[in-house]
Every structure is written in structure tokens, then in C-alpha cells.
Length: 61
Image (tube, rainbow, N blue to C red; front, side):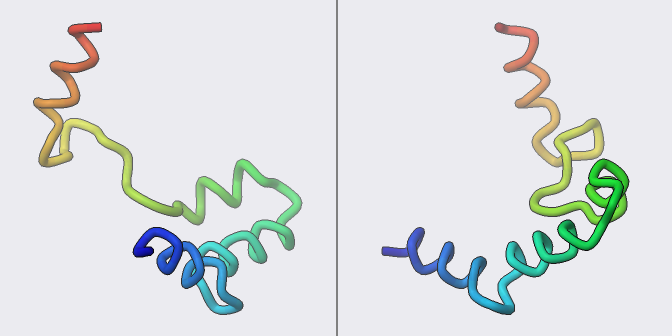
């Protein structure tokens, strides 16, 4: 299973998710840590290649 393998890699001792969460544990100010250490995909905004598609979805709902 590709999804299971991907998750296993991410939570392995040196996986990106585990490293991120370990850093989070050391920080007193969680919102500041999250702001200074973005994780995952960048936000979908006007600069995103698919902005027109997502903007249309927002206004259709």
C-alpha cells in the first residue's frame, strides 16, 4: 500500500512529520512555531497555479 508506506516514512525516527512534532514539543509558543515552521503544502492563494479553480469553487458554494 502506497499510503501506508508514505505514512511509515513520515513517522519514522527521521521522518519529516516526526521531526516537525519533536520541534513543536520544544517550543513554548505553539502558534509562533507553526508560523515560523510551515509544514506540508503551501496555502492556496492568488499565487497558486490552481487559484482560478479554487476561487470558482469557493464562490459556487
